[in-house]
Image (cartoon, rainbow, N blue to C red; front, side, top):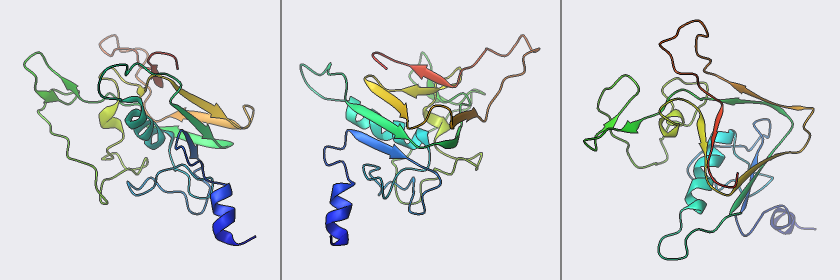
Length: 175
């Protein structure tokens, strides 16, 4: 079987199944990667969630469709940057968790999606109290539950009463 046909066999053409495998050689969080191929999955769950959010938004009437996206994650350890994200204050200004005014630029080839870099763009879209937002109708499915671990990079100090408790994921409707 020619390689092109094999690749088509392993690719989800509808785009509603996204793959995450940080151990795959061709895994990439690049904006050019669609993540709908087992041969070129995303490196991080968060990058797949950003892509799932694009599918969840449907303009116009009758846009309340569910069951849009499934994210299939491979066995292994997956890290989540669940730090508090940006929020819009009552005046409509975008702020970071410290209160500094921020802007978000459009994704491009140089957008930083590296989960190990504290300056990555992945945490920007988290809940302002912490936790990665899972878009409506998105399922996160592991191939092997016993061999798949999700580890947060942000854990609030449990003895500091001034810090709001955080989570790894913030679920929305039908997740």
